[in-house]
Image (tube, rainbow, N blue to C red; front, side, top):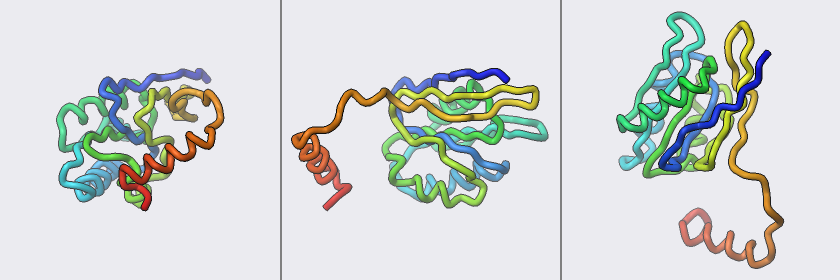
Length: 160
């Protein structure tokens, strides 16, 4: 077995969701969930088929995000993995709906941070074993940091 760290190419620091699914129908079902989430949400999806023709299946409503998803799916190259790039929206708004798609098995991460995907390669293929999402902590929040966190969540409408 070989282990590899695959950096996700995300030049605009867009939000993305990386997950694992089990069926070719994933692309269409995830597309429908995202299209219904918001009229302003732009997205691109790529899914690595694990059997048959083993194609990277793709969809989206923004050609540049679809191409970005395909490029990253190709680099990761893990069977049954999918990657979604989002613009004008956040994963928190769609994550539960994506988790409810019957084909979705798991979500590895939802982030806009620098991301590395840890991939194991064997004679059978490639699989995602985890992710490195952003940097390590630099400290523990102070009382002032707590007040700022709470204020931010209320300013942007996530808490009352």
